[in-house]
Image (cartoon, rainbow, N blue to C red; front, top):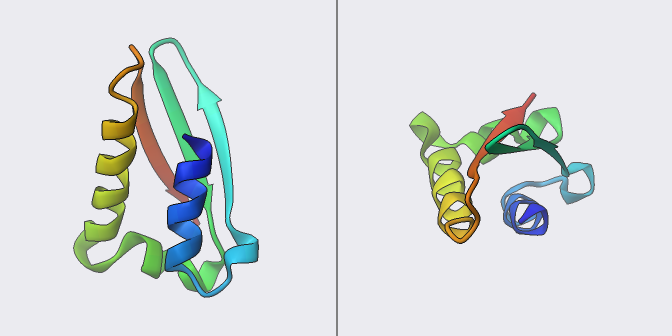
Length: 76
């Protein structure tokens, strides 16, 4: 799943070498922390957060088989 977030983010940004994804697991929650180059934060979030919402939807759909909640946090 971490690779999925990284591949999608790298396709969106101008500086793909600065894309990093970190996984943080809690009780029933998995958080993927996405960090990108400061110039690319707007591209990952999108207008009114549409791209970020779509990214979260894709990751949530891919994680349906696991019994944990999954979310993506974009770090600036």
